[in-house]
Length: 188
Image (cartoon, rainbow, N blue to C red; front, side):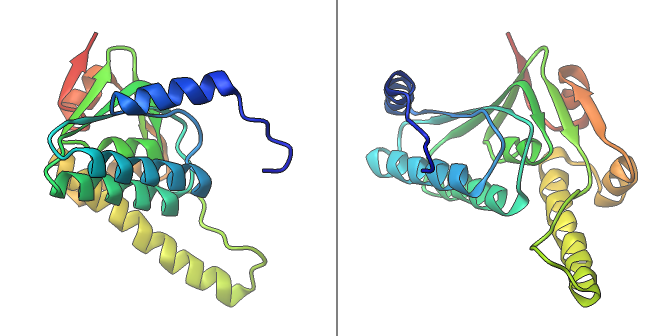
């Protein structure tokens, strides 16, 4: 853990919230965070398939591969019959906006901002030209997967989404996100 000292108060709060079936995604999405998130989802599903889970999201996004694991774990919980609500609070940007799509119910507070954009980085270390070519192909495949997720949940055609986010960040306030189909309801 390289010098990281865990805050016992934060740990107690996180434990208490988990007992209430609430999970917070409040930082950059990383492999480490995804592992903790996925373990928490597994634990909650094993405790009860009747009680809902709420995932609160305040995040700038992060790495797409850990995101896929988090997204899929929420879908697996839903497949087990667990109701999952995702709630964007403040902002859900990039990968976090895709995680928001995993809920049965997708909510946002009235001041929330949601960001969609193309995959912006997909790098595995020292690259040769041939590596760059392969990574570009993989970036395009991953970008299409993300667009399929957003299209499926929002009802927006993939071709329209591609045009909308091509070469730019697309920010939505809560009202715009609701109209676009990124959320189901504005709360607060």
